[in-house]
Image 1 (cartoon, helix red, strand yellow):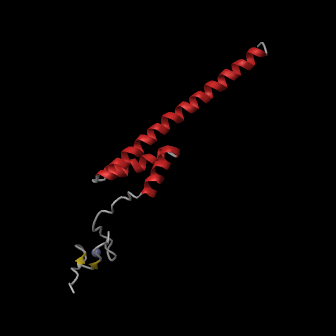
Image 2 (image 1 turned 60 degrees about the horizontal axis):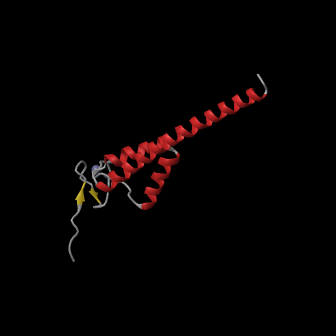
Image 3 (image 1 turned 135 degrees about the vertical axis):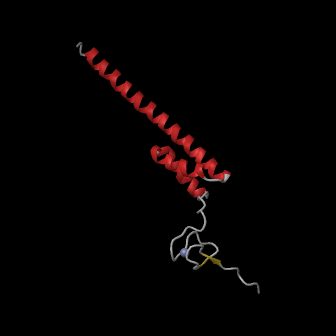
Amino acid sequence: MAELIKKHCPKCNTEVSEEAYFCANCGTILRAKPTDVSITKQILIYFVSLFLAPFGLGYAYTYLKQPDMKSKIIGAISLGLTILSLVFGYLAVKSFFEQSYNSLLDITNTQGL
Ligand SMILES: [Zn+2]
């Protein structure tokens, strides 16, 4: 049976697990935690980007920074959805105010003021 090569923390030399992201003893980061690219995470990110637009920018930024292509694509989609959401949000608010203004004009016109 092959002996497992043990990994040690470069700072305090504590034996650490091969899968560990940080040293349990001193907290030194051993390797960058990969971003979650699962489909459920993607749905969450796209949902946040569309409906809670400003918060989508945080995800977009984090994912665009990642070295792997898949994360970058997710970040780009998230950014696109955020921008779309902001544009549509702006148009919706704009048309709402225009409508209110027009109906206000109608009221004043019908009342002959
Ligand atoms: Zn350590």
